[in-house]
Image (cartoon, rainbow, N blue to C red):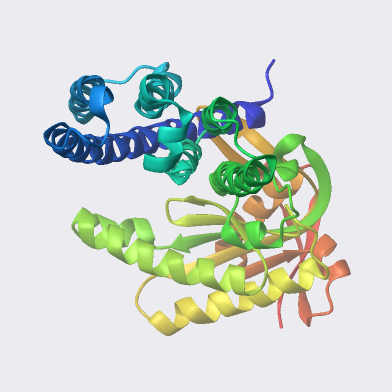
Length: 404
């Protein structure tokens, strides 16, 4: 059976990578638009060179034909990307076409007119700039493989021309250092994206299962909290709004939901203020945990303090709604319940059941809060004994306490 946490992490990863791919396509479309503008500008330059035949002589017409062909490709690519047409091979094909165009654009004058003419008329800085643009464009594809490929093409373009014109090694070294800095920057940007993706995967994976209070206290790899079920000692608090069902029957659903959100939200804030975790809402009920998933010192005291404040908050609201709370301490199992399709972080065990039974007993005993002997033994908060009660589904009786 597959690990549900890893299944969920895989789903979140795929979702984020799909989002990155869509962003990369949008970036590619932006680059394509810039390419169209640049190539159209080059057509104007070629027309000027043809009109002024003294500049490139016999190389002018071949360059013009090459630029027109590049313009056709650029416009077609731009339109295809705008229409959402994408192929996985494009991140490799597009920079390859670019480097072929750059190579021919700078190489034709060298072949037809010689290297000396190239140095005089076509400044080598143009090739350096083209190589740098190639490297930088790879970073916009948000893929390490794409940026490495673009860097290789950029270095290849520069080295080919440096060799063709027998460039002095000093100048070649300077240019290579500059291009290396551009390449390192491009890779660095891509790695920043990679780290951000992994961080977001972890945050979303755990965020779907744990409350923010747990995330804030988690280690560098909070997914470890979800990897395996763990047995821990906690204090469980179960609350229920007494009289809510009868009250809600006389009111429209929207009013009922608004009231429930307000009161449950207030109670949840109290739990979190005392470093507890709201495990789940159960309609007008709530299950809170003190001591899991992260360990909490004095979890019994924290739970009792929260219970007292919750009782006061509901009493201050007035009206027919009352609050019943059961508090019990003991061992529970914490972990993930479900699969990668639908998971929740939860606590399981007899401790939870006992706390729920105590809450159900509050009305019969006539107190808003019932506390088990197990919790009382761990607490320093003042309590008053209420004798023993029998709980449904439990053998024997249980000694219980109320808040002082």
